[in-house]
Image (cartoon, rainbow, N blue to C red; front, side, top):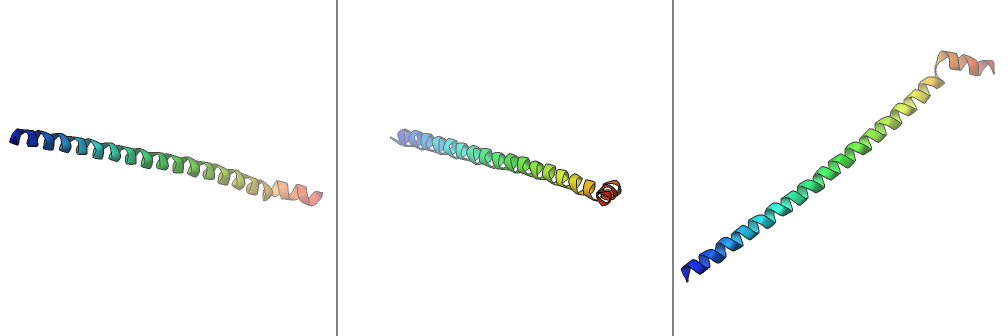
Length: 71
């Protein structure tokens, strides 16, 4: 009888450890996905900022300003 309880306890313990490990992996995957999505978003923002900076620099470029004044 004692062996039966030990076997049930070991099975329950093993099952609970496996479920806990699976939940940790799932949480790890979710966090990894969020980090990757944030990096992609940050990269897009940097590209947009670079484009706007180039447009601004072309607007305040001395040759561009002189061409606009001539018009």
